[in-house]
Amino acid sequence: MTRKDRYKEFIAYFQENQPQAETELHYDDPFQLLVAVVLSAQCTDKRINIITPKLFADFPTPEHLAATHFDELFPYIKTVSYPNNKTRHLMGLGKMLVEDFNSEIPQTIEELQKLPGVGRKTANVITSVIWNQPSMAVDTHVFRASKRIGLVNQNASTPLSVEKQLVSHLPKDIISLAHHWLILHGRYTCLARKPKCETCKLTHFCRYWEKKEGIIR
Image 1: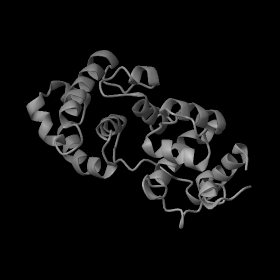
Image 2: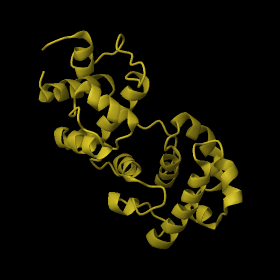
Image 3: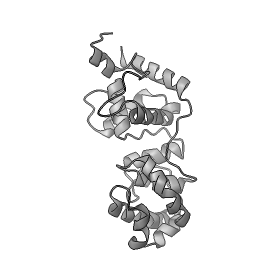
Image 4: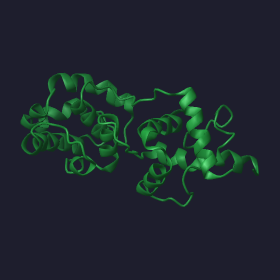
């Protein structure tokens, strides 16, 4: 099966079966999503959704984060991964949003990456989810699932290389949606240690399954 055929099957399946996929992080505005995504690095969305309601209630704007101090903010996020670094990131993020961006969330990947704690993956999430730009955030789930399915080269060794290949092959109008398809597929079906191939609905075009079963197409 050619890569073009795999993309065709991938898009067709998810457009029919999961046309409304979206982030599992809870948020009410762009600022809240930005904070949630920064906190979610190497942490589960479930954990972030547990701690953010009180955080958002007490720190609802960039100004609130900019005005806080470490000992005040840390208790709100102490149960997430790397809480010390993330506390500092949020404080710096709040100050930069206030001082450099008039408390508005930037709309470009380049500007977003200037913010403390915001790397390319986080910037892609924000531009995709909030601004509906054709951005592909590559986390561990997207990286793993896209390679196993056969959407990208097996020798793609970095998130950026996977991102570039996915963006070059997917229609622009569904890139942001495909990002969620791959995340959710990797999170719940194409698991890292024990993928649920027996119940997966993508085996008819999955390269990993073909190799596992010795199927030649």
